[in-house]
Amino acid sequence: MNKALLQRVAYNISRWSILSTTAAGSGHPTSCLSAVDLIAVLFFKEMCFDPFDPENPNNDRFILSKGHAAPLLYAVWHELGVISDQEMLSLRKFDSILEGHPTPRFSRSEASTGSLGCGLSIGVGFALAARLRASSARTFVLMGDSEIAEGSVWEAVQLARHYKIGSLTAMVDLNRLGQSTQTMFGHDAHAVAALFEAFGWKALVVDGHDLEAISKAFEQAADTLDVPTCIVAKTFKGNGIDHVQNKNGFHGKAFSKEEQQLVLEELEQRFITAQKSIAQELADDTCSPERELQEQCLVKEVCKLPEYDLGEMVSVRKAFGQTLAALGSCNEKIVSLDAEVKNSTYAYLFEDKFPNRFFQSFIAEQNMVGMATGLASRGFVPFTSTFGVFFSRAHDQIRMAAVGRSPLRLVGTHAGLSIGSDGPSQMALEDIAMMRAIPDSVILYPSDAVSTAKCVQLMADHYDGITYLRATRMATSVLYRNDESFELGGMKIVRSSKQDVVCVVGAGVTLFQALEAYDELLAQGINISVIDCYSVKPLPAQQLYEVAQRSQGRVICVEDHYIQGGLGEAIAAAISDEQVQVTVLAVEQLPRSGSPEKLLAWAGIDAKAIVTAVKNLNEIQNK
Image (cartoon, rainbow, N blue to C red; front, top):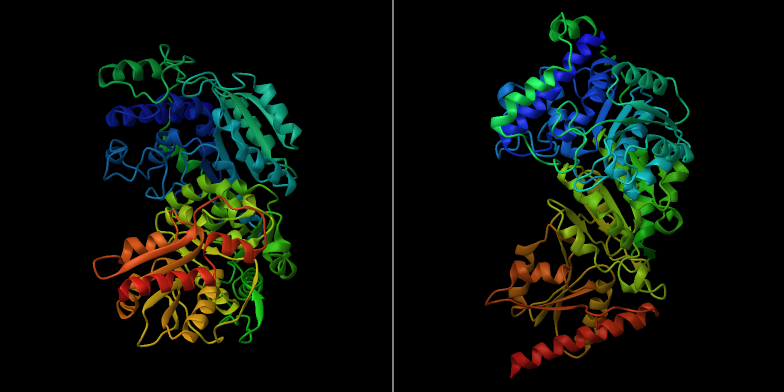
């Protein structure tokens, strides 16, 4: 493709970036203009992809990490004939697929971005997915210079070097200006390049508005096979428009309708008009990758899950690792990501069987979740495991994955204060609240090995949002037979009678405390029902309500979690009314180191506390 045509493409992308944001009355046209030349060369000369077969696994992939420049992405696809003029002018409207930042509502958006610092991690996941498929597809990520201040970027940089991902090319749009001030590096492109080089990347500095220099940089990146490449492009924000170019104060400001025509006329002066139509030239010079690819098998056979004996002592986390390894034998798309705690989460059992599908992410949870998002987007089934408390570090990545409708499978072990003497910094006591707030999330909290195996299988089969499995550290007794069935939104009535005065709901470690309390109360002639609420979200609200009504309308929820945002609050919000009263026993103070038994007693969530709570309710009722 000749230079004149690339210039015309760049002009058209610039023009539609302005037209769409002016029509919307908001947006970031100046952030689009700085990267136009990079994107014109990338999409119309360098990348190999079929624009009308987006699911082709051999397509090169592009992630717009600086998501506020979304009109730039949409303008490219308008130029490729996928988006109409009318659709471009619907930008940011309620019924438009073209949102202010990219989301899957626009099918050519590879990832939801907008929270800066997420894109490169997703790109690492894309590149690893291509490697697993033995595909030659390359991955390109455009970052803004402001976002390279984010630590998650450097987590991704390190891991990309560690895995020698030569198919990954990052671009830094070094336009000097952030939202409110000059960025950390300004226009010092060599300083940015030196950082990437220090982390083992190949770094190339270019004039981001020189089409020939950009093209040569991409050629050098393509020839670099053993390390990833970063192209640091010195650009100007608002390039081509004199009154805004390289000037602060215009971030996120659309041009008015009154100035739009003058701006477009000024912009056109810096471009050469191509002699041939773009459509004709595209037809003459299109790189379309082969569609043929050996697809990995989804399921080889009905998978045989691990089996356990009633009464056997097995930790939930160990059952998770055993089940994941078993599922990996049946589903070749399952991959495991670990944050350097595989010996505690038992993820090493999967690694032992499938080392090529296991990715050590080290102590970098944000990047790990971003990688999982990328792998999931490319059709893999990632299980991402670490201590539950450390997912809080990656909450933003989890939130953005939910925006992108990514079916992440997250497993948080060592949940609750019952882990004991490691102390409060290691205790996941906020994780249910965090995951409950994620749109369309599923939270599973199994209590024994059998329910864990069934819940892990439910996660593997769930593609409609994020699933989170909460796992306690200690070994627990197997309660269920291996043929017991479990479902999303389900629960188990573990104990009940026709004389129940209270319904006690537990999950995880507190279920066993409830069973201990049941035995003590029964010896005293007091009957209670005991519920294993293994599905925290979706909550089995109707079933709980029915059991509560049969238990004189009284429910005690016992949980190893802070009271705010936990299972108890969920149950109270769902079923409490004039007929059903919900009492919550939960952690209400900052804990400390100690034995699990001491901590459960201190928090008032052990068997003794349950017995006391039941008796108090019963006495009040009898008065």
